[in-house]
Image 1 (tube, helix red, strand yellow):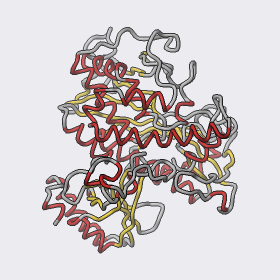
Image 2 (cartoon, helix red, strand yellow):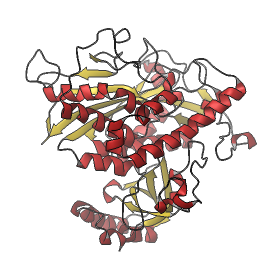
Image 3 (tube, one colour):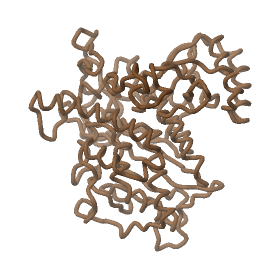
Image 4 (cartoon, helix red, strand yellow):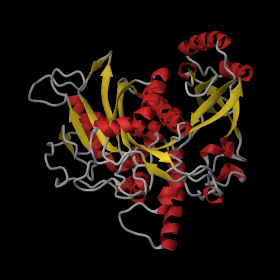
Length: 485
């Protein structure tokens, strides 16, 4: 069968699949969702009957390649029905089928919907070759190239709101390339009472359901906190291997949105909603390198904050910050965060336990949790691409023996290169960067640039037509991202 013929599973996965078949025989499942990540980091899925799902554990399952050719408003970016699929790739002609292969170690039973399973898949061409534009394949390939284990912890902010519209109307319905108006929502708490227990308790009925769901899904939740804006929530998760973290993040976002919607609420991972008083949300990515379970960033001496390896990795993140930014902040809206004297960075510098720096170093000699916290990301980032960009940037510093320079105690005044201040600037920085072209491949980089430039082009056309400018999020951004993410 397909999986065996092309040797797509490891011995561990084959053993997991055998155990999964036994489990399925005892579970009272009605459907199993096959899920995969699109280029935006959004979970896409098909629901299969149990007998058909069992067949996928040997044969895989056909899906259309279309979800990877659409921008964030569902508009077709590439000329799929021409030779080469508008990409100059013969295998993309005609919007062909792909085969998705379940990863048996990712199977869960969804706790908020009766009798439905969920499993994450990898995409392949019919000849068994990995799909060019699969972000999960890209991350797995980069991880295989390094002798180190990248350990990643999550700290993500998002907004919880109440839905105040009972039903959809025509104005909510869009067309490909143009999203309709998202549902109207109301704040669930007034905000700006940082860590208020009273306001946290207002949200507790929903947060309690979420915590229970995360636990049943095996997501390593550490905390749920009432953040700064009205209904702004921060969730933190324990550090795990890079691939497991990316997989869990994909599930975390889609689970959060589904559970909240069933409770009459709305969750969004849009960085800065175009709503009164909504402060920007970020995704702070904590990372270290390990070998044999040992954290290699821990320094040997009390007067150091990082080991030589950790310092070189930090230097790589800083040196390659401009080109990597678009993978951490891939939307027009995400650049609303980059302001001086905010909780988000505006230039490529580092500090020790300093929340104004792009890279916040935490830990030190004798601290097993020594790590780097990259504060440049937005909650809507594709987890596979964001984490992959850190591997490429950081290990470049290691391979070249780069040094990060002195730490910054006033990061917004430091003499460092500014980060890209718009999606356009970030795409330009990526396009001319040789490192990411070499590590991600020209085919993927050219594809990603076209996909994101289509999104940017629609925004600029709308902005010119409507004459809106300034620092505030626009109605276009609200329509584009509030419900998509």
